[in-house]
Length: 402
Image 1 (cartoon, rainbow, N blue to C red):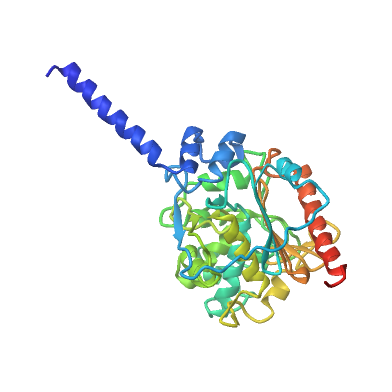
Image 2 (image 1 turned 30 degrees about the vertical axis):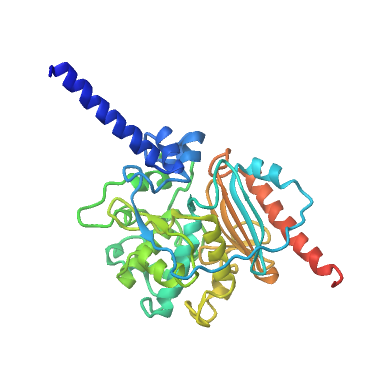
């Protein structure tokens, strides 16, 4: 056989294998490969790249590596309820949000479930900063389990590499409320901001990547005197939990939340260059499991009648611990709070879990906002939607019993 024929035969076999491999992939992975980002910097991806990657961020290790959070052995039901009657056009709202999933759960029943962008409930969508509230809940669990003695302990007790840095005198509570006073730039549009640079930082030898970056930041205000939103600080919270418990965040999340809450599908948690889960970002989960998480927290995060967090935790975590410069709003322990008692986990590009204990209400949002990480129009529209759902629930309560 001639060399030319042998090469042609080899190429035919490779091509056939590639085609077979392509069609063996799930649709989300194929979509990502068709428009795979050329860099790891999500803040500066194109809209098509975001649309594809947000549903498959954990599919390609070269893009992002992750740890698995296994599904629960016993799935918690999400029974359907009567369709929620809203005055606004839900389809138009979802189009404006570029929504991939919108779920409303009231009194334990699924009252609204819609999908968009070619996504459905069988897939996973990345949470971005919604993960901050997951990490906060694990802090509560670590306090209850005795791994963290007090929220007033200094952070450097649990992360010794921070001794001598601006974080040396910062308490765990100040880290949770983002009132450390340490300088940080969270400008998503600035490629030179801390939030854009920290993930590409080359860590010092033998040191966790994030700690290596954060320990070099200067102090800007006295600890406890100023609120400043900092993803880096939640990442430190995640490192603190890992070092206090001596467990990966994915493992601890599985033990304390994912298993007990009856999650139907596995989740994943993106890890840093040094193989540690990023506390401030990027748990991938199904929309219904985000709803189950909201219900788990709404019901006090209880397992067999016992809460996984200390008594009084939710009264502190989900209410205003610090002012953020907006009337009627505040920040708790990695939760955005409202003065009416509701609170929410929020992620860039339209991720969210809204919880209203008074109305026994959970609203899950997965999206890919066209206006970027901080889209004022999309933000305002989502807040209006929350209010509309609350009013619809209230109106039902005013109806005469049948």
